[in-house]
Amino acid sequence: MSGQEETDSSIKQEVQGEEDTDTSETEEKNEEMKDEAGPEVEEDPAPKEKSVWVPSVLCTISKERHSFVGYTIDIYESLDSFGAVIWPAALALCQFLDNNRKQIDLLDKTVLEIGAGTGLVSIVACLLGASVTATDLPEILGNLCCNLNRNTRGHCKYTPQVAALCWEQDLEQSYPRSIYRYDYVLAADVVYHHDFLDELLVTMKHFCLPGTTLVWANKIRFQTDLRFTDNFKQAFHTTLLADLPEQEVKIFMARSREE
Ligand SMILES: C[S@@+](CC[C@H](N)C(=O)[O-])C[C@H]1O[C@@H](n2cnc3c(N)ncnc32)[C@H](O)[C@@H]1O
Image (cartoon, rainbow, N blue to C red; front, side, top):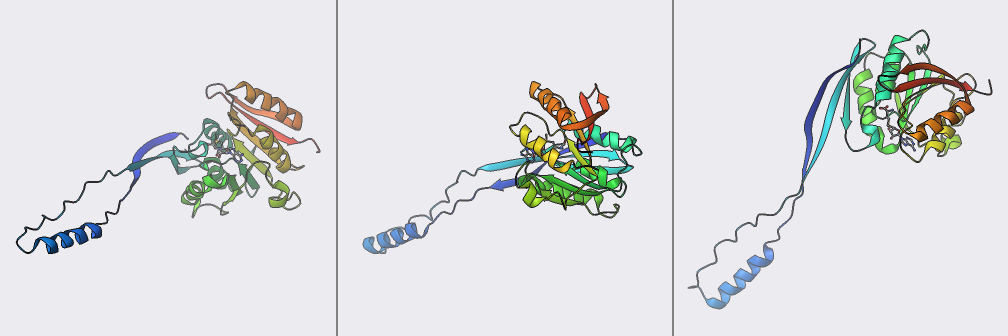
C-alpha cells in the first residue's frame, strides 16, 4: 500500500524588516529651541512615532505524507527550487522498489542517489535495508538532511549520509572510483529541462562501474529527454524495468559496458 495521504500547507516563516529611527538628533534640536525661547515657550509635544512600512516575506512550506515499506514518510517541501518538491518519477521508483524487493534487493547494499531532492527515494532505500548516500547540489542538502533524519532515525539498519555532488564537478577528486564503489546508483527525474545533461551522463558513467546497477526513473517530457535516453542506451547495457503510461514514467536499469 502506498500513496499520498495528506498535504498540509502552512505559513512557516514570517520575516519582518525593522527600521531604526534615530530620535537623538531631533531631541537635541528641541533642547536648543527651548533654551533660545526661554521657559515660557510651550514644549513641543513628544514626537509621534512614524509608522514605517514593513516589508513582509512569506515562505510557504508544505508537507506530503506517503507510505512505503510499511512506514509513514513525511516529506517537507518548499517551492524555491527544483529539488524542493517530490517529482513523479520519485514516487514511481519508490513504488517499484517496494513492490520488487527480490529483483532489486537493497538489503545490506551500498546505494548512491544522485539529484536526491527531498530524499524520498533515499529514505525508501534506507527502509529497505540499504546503506545510502543521498547527494545533490549544496543548497538542497539542508532540507534533504532533515527529511532523511526525520524518517529513518530509529528504524533503519544504516544511518543515511548526505553529501554534495554537482554533476561532473571534481568527481575523481571527491569520489575516486577506487574508493567509492556502490552496488546501486539511483536517480529519479534528473532529466528535465536543464543544461547539464552531458554532465549528468558523465556522472552516471563515473559511478556505474562493473558490478554496479544504475536505476534511473524518469517522466519523459521533452525532445531533449529522448535524446538523453538514446545516449544513455549507448553508454550502458540497459533494460526497461517498467513502463508506466499513466504516470508517463519509465524505469531503466543499466550496467557498465565494461562488464
Ligand atoms: C527534478 S528534481 C528531482 C528530485 C528528486 N529526485 C525527485 O524525483 O523528487 C532534479 C534534482 O536534480 C538536482 N540537480 C540539478 N542539476 C544538478 C547538478 N548540476 N548537479 C547535481 N544535482 C543537480 C536538483 O537540485 C534536483 O534535486
